[in-house]
Image 1 (cartoon, rainbow, N blue to C red):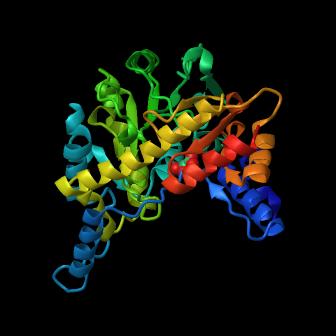
Image 2 (image 1 turned 90 degrees about the vertical axis):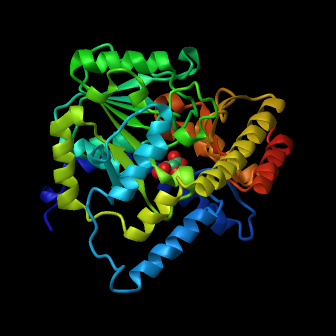
Length: 393
Ligand code: MLT
């Protein structure tokens, strides 16, 4: 094959995806230290089993598929109406956000949606991306050949609220609660971004994959709680972290009626490139909004948030500075100066056999920080903290 036919923009990417790099480092440590007792607080992957209400719905749906009357083949690419309505009622209406079922698209993951959505835009678009943030926004735009990218720094000095671009941009990614800093964007910040987007004709791509972790009802959960957002924002939600679906795969993308052309294009894209999420999974996702489902999921999230509180407490008592972990499953740990976050990753693995994620993997403003997740088992989380407190200093 001629190399000239390859997408040359891939050459502009970091050599490997952040979490693949981390996985490789862990594998190589394991090989050189057989029997190592590694505690993983790196990738944000859930550890608690699916809720009983979700499992029961999966069983029922599987049974339905076992006979001719209940069997289903291809489903609607946009998702079954029962789930889209359940999402509108269960996820958005309680926040005072009124969505129609046809504004909601069901998919097999927010990562894919957030990475694919940029396909709808011109390659010359100017893109604003928070720094630090989930690396998929940047990498997917690089793959598409976009060069005009500006970063919105978020640091302790601005309370981890990304700075509004000084010049006009077309696409703005926001993530709240933020991955990796765990910070929730304030109503003022979001209002300023919505005003900016309306003034500049820009679009906000709002990733709310961790909204279920917000503990304070007065904080903004959905961008549509901000007046004007329906005319300038798309929102991504996920069942992965909300209900333990990282391996099951189901997510939601909202494109409001006010963005009619964009909605038509996303539908065109999905109907062409995607055949929908399977029926069993969509019934399982619907069960998340049943009274039992809600209660069971609330308890699981409370367990993860107890881990987050333990990590925050352990590190703070050890004399370190942290943020996040109050409305998000991520704790953002400020490292002592003069050590890079990748060097710290190696030191933490070697001295404590604990894995986290180097802050610089989320952008240059993440240098000097380290992310720990609260998704571990409580006992491993406690043991990780004990090792950090006793072996690290
Ligand atoms: C993370 O650790 O940042 C997440 O697990 C990545 C993801 O959700 O794809």
